[in-house]
Image (cartoon, rainbow, N blue to C red; front, side, top):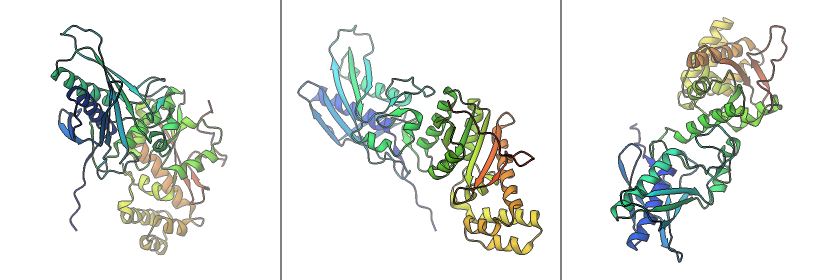
Length: 380
């Protein structure tokens, strides 16, 4: 079957830049445009539809854009991103570049913890989007012969509601979403926002003085990990989703000393294979590998055949637990080996595998005498 071509989209940063440009043009040309063209951080240009635009009695203008993530899964897809623009009539030399003052309004989060690209107290409008907004506004002001300054307030009407579906609170970004984008374009299945969140989470952990983190693949595995290590600071937990390599490489790059991978058996199998991205698409190949490991560890060809015939990792797990802990241990050990290949020798790796009720069935950090390992780090 021919694969469907996936549609690209644009970032919240691109939406904010387009809204700012549309509002400024509404002031200077006294008209509401249907579309505006903005320059991306790659140097390419893109035409963005305008959702709504109006002049205000105080001389400012408000314009909004509907964020389109294309075929990429994104909680901000369909969100209304807006900008309120005001031209300041302060005198400036004709040769001076216009000043663009950017702030965050309703629904834009505010940074409260160190470790992110911007300091605490700043609105969560990342440097890339700030450059895009500044370029779009400067282009219009120069085209109309204007000097002085323009104030841009970015807002997201439902931003606080959307932010509850993100990890912003964990990162110390409160009150709304982040305005993101490193290129301006969202490419399907690139998950740029997710990988940016992983990077931000690791940065916050380091800035909070933590040397060890617990990497989980989602909210459920994280909840079980938090029950296992209740004394850990919230910043020590970083959800990496399917991004095994990104999470491990990020830990090493940030100078983190140790990482615990706390995962369910299905993700554990893919990590044990050394897959950089643990999406479910190659489940049968994963079971093939597990069947081979089972045969090697147990010398039980019949059991290996049952594993090979299993439909899911969960079914295979039921064949192995609790009767064959050595096979599960083999998976856990392979996770550590694969992670070390991504990180290099400086990052200490611990693998913990949960059953589907959250009980630990393997822990590579157990001492030889069977004692439980120390908690992955102190609460701050």
